[in-house]
Each structure stands twice: as structure tokens, then as C-alpha cells.
Length: 195
Ligand code: GTP
Ligand code: MG
Image (cartoon, rainbow, N blue to C red; front, side, top):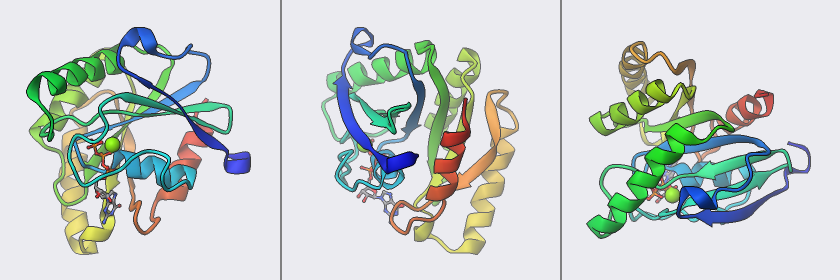
């Protein structure tokens, strides 16, 4: 991405607030606290761009970031446990599902999976929704710095087995650490190559 120029564009709380579908768009979905916002910061090289925090449920809107004036990077609220009142959580879960199944310009959904935990039941639900909406998704493993290589292999084979059942899954899995920088260049190249 020439110049590496990225910026926050807007936070969206309803489908009617989405920006015009005039650019290549990719999104980052995953359980609360999996590392979505941190990954966007690592990809753009701007530490405080997307707000990351230790509190699950930090991101409560659909946040649009522009990348190199050609792409939108979309940071989504997490699913699963969140440290926020139930009606609020339900509202953003609904929005999340509407977005994932109804955004025409969404070119690929990156689904983030914690390297320590693998694919859980709540993840399966989102993967099935993406299958049914025919949105190609690619799994990005996060927090690889937190476990040893040998344990990583075990989790990766679990993930591969589960992905085999999802027609919308893109087969290549990207292993990342936003903390240490592992896999970030690979993911950047994958996004840059999308047409
Ligand atoms: P929500 O917005 O609440 O859904 O969370 P999120 O998925 O955006 O996660 P976020 O990026 O806020 O990160 C959650 C926590 O995990 C933060 O404390 C991050 O510093 C930490 N974290 C994220 N990525 C990594 C990583 O690659 N390695 C390590 N060690 N910690 C990470
Ligand atoms: Mg977040």
C-alpha cells in the first residue's frame, strides 16, 4: 500500500449509515477480544488508529478505515461474551449479522481466531452465516506469540478440519501476531492482491 496512508473514516450504528459501496472492502470479524482492532493497527502501522483494549466489547460500532485511498478496512464489534449491557450487545450483534450478510462490496471477511482457543461454537455460527450469504472468508489466527509452535500445530489442524465443512472458506490460514508483527506483511499482501 503505497504511502501507507490510512485514516479513520466513520463509525456506523445502522446499515443506513454505511458509506457508498465504491471501494474494495474487507472486514475483520471475530469473538470479543480476539484482536481485531489490534490487527488493523498492525496492518496500517498506526498504533492508536483502531481502539484496542483488554475489555471484551470495546468496539461497539462498525468502524470504517480507509487504506491507501483504494480500500476500506472495516473493524467490527465482537461476538460472544462482552462487557456491556445485554440490550446494547443485542443491538450490535444484529447490525453485525446484517452487515456480514448484506454488504454487496464486501470482498472478503477475515475471521479472526485466537491461536490458543481454535474455532468455538460462536465462531461456527458466523462461519455458517457467511456460507449462506456466499461471502468468502479467510481465517486469521491471532496472538500467535502467546503459544509455542508445537501447540500451534495442534490448533491449526483443528481449524483446518472445521474449515473443510464450510464452502465459503478460503483454504489458506494466516497466522499472525499483532504484538510481534508475525504474518502482518503476508496479510497485507493478501489484501493488496484482492480485486
Ligand atoms: P473487541 O473490540 O472488544 O471485540 O476486541 P478486539 O477483537 O478488537 O480486540 P483488541 O484488538 O482490542 O485486543 C484485545 C486484547 O488483546 C488487547 O489487550 C490487545 O493488546 C491484546 N492483543 C491483541 N492482539 C495481540 C497479539 O497479537 N498478541 C498479544 N500478546 N496480545 C494481543
Ligand atoms: Mg475492537
